[in-house]
Length: 102
Image (cartoon, rainbow, N blue to C red; front, side, top):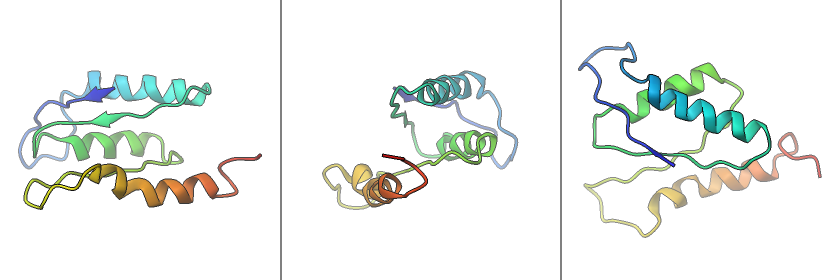
């Protein structure tokens, strides 16, 4: 699932026009809580408000673990770069004793 948030008002801290994108995140979150695995990609052009959208979602769900990765168009592309970014954190999350009781 990829979510492209709409552009925000420059310089503002208020999250505008994000109801649809937040609803998609909430649906994925509820589905994950029900036991279905979920992976959500938030995609869009630079400055469109991807980080603000994720910050808003995590503020609403402070106990939720969020792993992130990024592509940087100014650096040499790395194959699977964003996945490598959060790979270490994912490994720690999976092995943390409070996450899974096997």
